[in-house]
Image 1: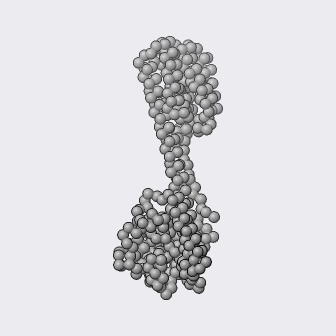
Image 2: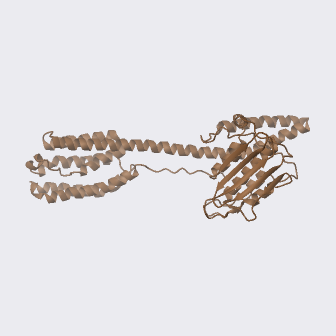
Image 3: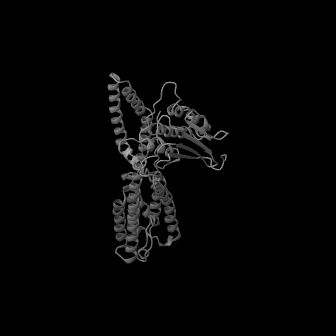
Length: 421
């Protein structure tokens, strides 16, 4: 079963809602404490006490409404703003006129800013601007004139609300962009995995049918020709539908790998890579011995040099690394010849495992990899580099004309420093 990539989404504005749930009770307590500390300025204390009772019940009873965007409805916002505006307009009724003229606070005091901020978090800077404007008008009405102190407070709340609303809108847009990028990356990885499976199975079978058909002649030759046409069509489909990450360089493709296996010949990459596919690949998976997966590649024409002790790797990393080695050997058979010799060297270091595959061929002509990629032949890009990239490793291909080709595969250990030199 295909492994699904899980895209995690994290709300950028949620901490702001959490801060608002703390802000409202604190400012409510501040407004009530301010009232009792300056009790003498009230001409009608009963009006102020009644308002503060409503304010306390409303604030504590609606905390869950300001815990997130979904719970904060439009109806709640308008009711919340009405409570704030009512407190501002009731200030001249409950407080002495001299206190208002001297610039004394309104009944809700700074609690009003919490209502405006809720508008900013819910609807952005436009909603915040409207709510702040209504609060400003109410302050001018209760003061009876537009004085400098009132204008200063109104502008401060208005600018702060618009700024926070704008930040929220930018955060939401960034979050959507990030989520989309993560989804594209997950889809790209899945397409690469499917393309590798097709390359390592279906395309190789079609190429083998074409070769055998041409060798047998007659009706088999026609069957081989049809298989060749299907191979080209499938390569075009895979290359056209694949979106590769930008870090894949121009030389990230080479000729397609065609595994020509006669009956009774040594076991190929597919069998070795499929060994242990039912094993668990989670963090608690038991490491497997890489040597077991590489042993089938050794033969009369392939020399395997490995440590005398086990080379432990997570099951998935070991499978993908062995599959990449098989793809490299397939390239040797295809481009150098069936009788070509190859060497595999396994190095087990404390922080990484390095597997080097070297052949005695003529090397890769300059520009051949880019040409192969344009033809839809993605052997190096998918079966080798793509596999290593998915398990956190890297693949480097060095080819000197006339001196063969060397592929170096590196897989870092998850438990750095605990490995064995």
